[in-house]
Image (cartoon, rainbow, N blue to C red; front, side, top):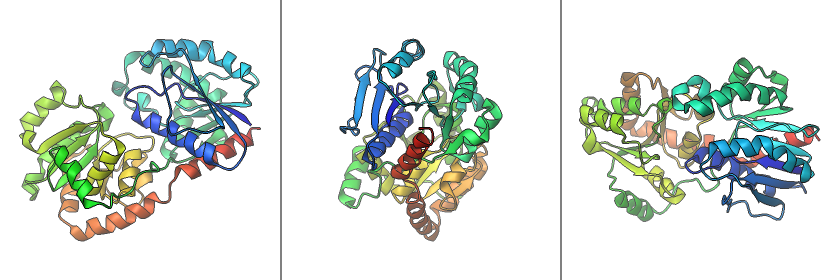
Length: 373
C-alpha cells in the first residue's frame, strides 16, 4: 500500500504529538512488508529518526507557528496532494484531517481535552475543533485511540460508533530505560542544581495538568516528615508565570522547587533514574506517556487516579485523587517513606512498561490500514 500520513500537527512545543509521529513512523517503516509512506509536514520540519527508503517527507508551505495557514492548506490543498500522490489511504495523526473522496480515511484522536478542560485550549482552535472534529470523526473509516478512556469520549461526545474505533496504546520511547552509569546520573543532577532526594514531574502550565494541585500537595510534605525533599519540574520554561510564582511564594516552597525547562532525552532519562519518585498529577489525559517513560526507567510512580492514567499504570504505581492536595500529599509521603514499596514499584513499573511498545502500536496500526485495503 501507498499510505499518506498527515503530520502537520508537529510544531514547536508540541512534544507529545511529535513523539507519537516520530515513534510510530519509525516503527511502521521498520515493520515487515513493502508499504510506502508519504508524510506531510510543515516547512523546515525534519524527522531524523524516520530515515528509510520507504518514507518520503513532503514539506508543505505551512509555517512552523501558523495555525491559520495550516488549516487553509490542510483543508484546501491536502486532498489534492493526496490524489496527486496516488495514495491508497490517508491517516490524520493529530486529531483532525480532511477526508478525501474515494480514499480510505483513518483518524487518530489522542484526547478530547478541549471538551474536558476548555480553558486549556485557546478559543479559536477550541471552537474549530468543536465544530469540525465530530464531522471528521464520523467521516473516518476507522478512529484510532490510545486508551479506553478516549474511546468512551469519542463515542459519547463525537458520535462515533464503537465498531469503527480501534484501541491502540502507545509505547515508551525506544531509548527509555534506566541509566546504568551512576556517574552520568550525578553529573546531570549537579548540572541542573538538583539535590537528593527529589520528586520529578514532567508538567506544563495547562489547567488540566494540575501544576497548582501538585504544588499545594508538595507544600504539605514537611508536615508529613519530608522537609528536605525537592520538587523538580521538567517541561515548559514558562511554568513560573505570575500566578504560579505567586503560589510558590505564598506556600513558602521557592527554595525547594526547581524547573529545568525542556531537556534532551538523555538528560531526562538521567533525572528519572536518580529520582526518588515520579509525580503525575494530571486531571485529564488521553494516555499519559510520561508515566510510561518513568516506569520504563524504573522510577516509582505516584499518579492521578483520573482518566487514562489508571489504564497505563495498572497495578504498578500508587494512584490518588490529584484534585485533593491532602490525599495526593499523603500518597507522595507514603511512597517517599517506604523503601520496600518503592523497590516493589520499580520492579512492577519496568515489567508494566514492557507490555507496551511502538512496535506493537505500529503492527496494530498496519492491521487497520490493511483492514481497509
